Length: 302
Image 1 (cartoon, helix red, strand yellow):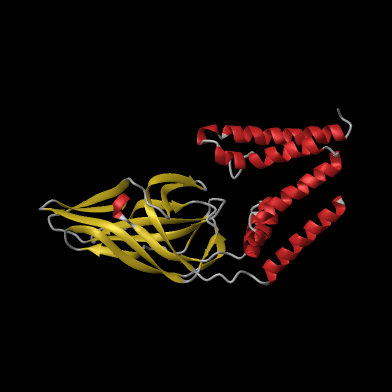
Image 2 (cartoon, helix red, strand yellow):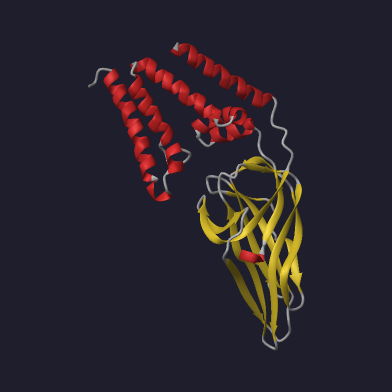
């Protein structure tokens, strides 16, 4: 019985993985908006302000000035990088700021400019965007770094990106020109761009290359079966345990603790408050302990 179940599950996995290879997902590009947020995080060793689909309730700004008895034009632009899981970066722009906006008189508000993304067909772990500023009499200087969450897992089609900057210029008579860039809260500095979702074969291969064996095995199954794939996996595990130990109560208890345990996705972790999530991990460890005890005892080591 156990052999037949294992063979059946192996056949299903191989079939679904083969289908995902031969008939890849024909997903069209989709539009996405990422906001420049005021909070920071560290991704793959790089610290920067967050890029996300929602903004923050708080705001942030950067300012600089150029001393001079006459007012200077101000400019803002960006450079774009792909950030790999190892922390290495790969620039998509050509080494100079793009999507440049300018102010030649005092004022403030949103300005926008576009950049033609050349496309990136490999799966992306994170994206980093650096905002640069200059006066008409100075060189470009880095003013702020923004980075998305890792495990973004997207590809980039050739498309036009639109950058929205909230800028301000203020000339102090006979002294200097002030330049400001604001983001977060109601300033709505953001990026509007296009992404594409990788097909399950590409995603599975990416996870295998990153030594995520479980993710590699489950990718095609979850793509076609959704969360039901995990149910099938747990069901097969329960049958295997029962066939090995022939103990319904211990098997049921261990499976219940495995399903309920874990701080992410477990049934019990949904029911308990965040302050009590340690309970979920305790239950998960207890379930593992029962399985190990049954394994050792079943092999005559008790």
